[in-house]
Every structure is written in C-alpha cells, then in structure tokens.
Length: 153
Image (cartoon, rainbow, N blue to C red):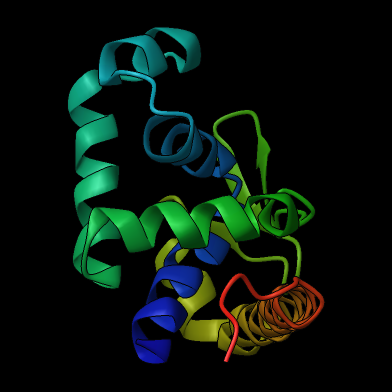
C-alpha cells in the first residue's frame, strides 16, 4: 500500500508544484467533503467530467475510493503549503527553478528535470503522515489501556 500512497502523493505534489492546486482542491471537495461533481465544477470553474476524471486517476493510483478519502483528508493541509515552481506570465509558463519557458502545463518538465523536488516533498509528507498515524495509534492504545474493562475474570 505504501507504493500506492507514494504514487498518489507524487501526482498531488506535481499538481501543486505546477500551479494546478485547483485539482487538489477539487479532489478534496469531491472525495472528502462529498460534494457532487456538478457543485464542485460550478464552484471551481471546471467541468463535472474533469472532476470525475481527476477522481478516477486518484482511485486508480491508490486502489479504492475509501483509501483516497483517508489519504487526501490527512495530507490536504500539507499539500496546500506547497508553492508552485511553475509560474504564469501572461500566456507563458516559466520554471522558477531553471528559468526555462514551458510550452505545456509543466508537469512533464518538473517530472523530468526536477524529480528531486517532487521526491523531497513526497518524502516529507510521508514522514509527517507516519508521525500522525503513530500518534493516533498511541493515543488509542493509551485510551484502551485506561478504560475499565467491563468483563471480569
């Protein structure tokens, strides 16, 4: 499952780095907040087909809708802190790392030439995610240990 999470995080981080945070926002609204594709589309200026397409790619990467819900709900705040490295100047897109002018959205460029940036963000998010999960598990174990048993021996 970790590989699936890594694949999903790479996809989401890449969207943020290339200035396509609206995709992450749409996924949160649709998958986590359970808004309809039509509602999300009208709020964000996208089509409901785009929303469904983004969700389909996410589910393919992670395996099922429930896992997508869990991961996106846990990492959304971390993703929103990522600043794009691709900037728009009029109709031009410029990579802020190397200064190249890009002809497309920049995802291919970032994947090819700045893979380490994507990997660093993914590693950091995975590390924070593991810490959060460990703390939750420790808290649950502590609660269970301090809850009086209803059965007696």
